[in-house]
Length: 115
Ligand SMILES: [Zn+2]
Image 1 (cartoon, rainbow, N blue to C red):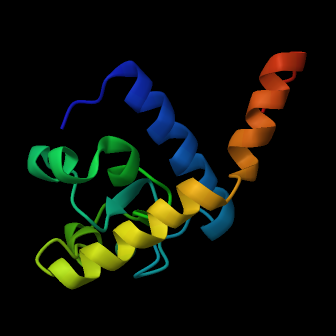
Image 2 (cartoon, helix red, strand yellow):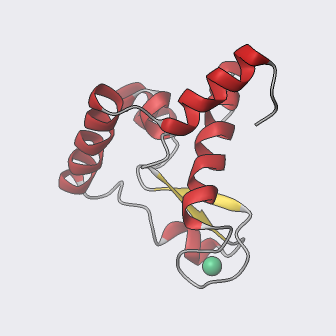
């Protein structure tokens, strides 16, 4: 689904963070990862339910290769209980923890240093 510029910049940062933590390898097969799979799928319905900040949050995305089987293996959209658990983790992360990467990116921006 199409992302607004604000959403795209947020997603880019979340993806960068995920690749930094997990490496650029597919979490399912170990090949080079180019994309991210969404645990709660990136659909209009899910964005309306959870917000795009949750859908594109680094906890909801997983590095994967271009194999659609690897991508779809992380989809938990059919399991309401798992979606609820992921949502709770993301909410907790957003409410109580400082995302260091975002924090330092802000500092770097303010002092004019590249990330
Ligand atoms: Zn793979």
